[in-house]
Length: 315
Ligand SMILES: [Mn+2]
Picture 1: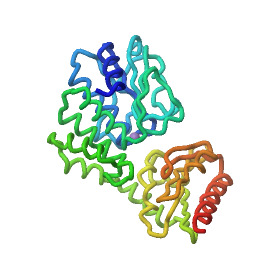
Picture 2 (picture 1 turned 180 degrees about the vertical axis):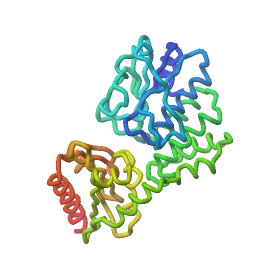
Picture 3 (picture 1 turned 90 degrees about the vertical axis):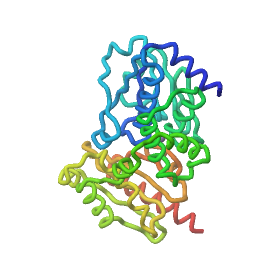
Picture 4 (picture 1 turned 180 degrees about the horizontal axis):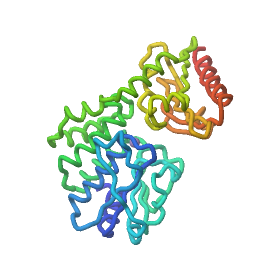
């Protein structure tokens, strides 16, 4: 068994109460790894109290929901945080109230935390790591757990298309595939969008600004979100949309916040854009990162930085 897996397994066996967290604005991997791990531990240690906490994201209710965790539950509890690079992004700041803390994540380890930390930036997803953990530790697996972990892997690999998809990813997916997951339901759920999101997507295509080098941007204002009855978090569903256009190389989706600032989602097909994100109160993966902008002027600044980057790369 890998040393780190053994270390984590040791801790799990020592505790009667385990509370699992993940990042804010959860995606399929955040929920899949968090609740996948919960189900896995409940299956293998039925005598233990295993809980999950964080905002109960309505868009992912079809996948799984959260538990209510009381403040007292943190007493003498082991806390495990899945899929979260830094402390600030952990959903439910009570994570620090446990007795010990374990980090399990696949993002670059730029802000280490936890008494034990298992970070593997080579892994496609935290769900892939949890699957690996279950196999190394020879834990039982069932269909419910397999469904969650599989969904997490599918989500973070863009359906096995992102470069992070490795042979190990397929090995883990093949293992999970042996369980009789309802795959047609999973794919239907993942493909389903609401009419409001479809309209937002239409807005993005109609209003996308593209320059001659493939730099693109679109701004989504609060009044539009209100009109469509959408929340800021719903906009994640349209972030990939500009990338489907042939002419677009790198792009920013600027989403106005309640306070007048902007959350900026930056994406790129080949040229890393995360240095731009770092200059603007953000960070992330080379081809997918996020930033925060104070106002429209800073939005223009960010867009011109994307434009310059692409212009330079043309030479
Ligand atoms: Mn992830």
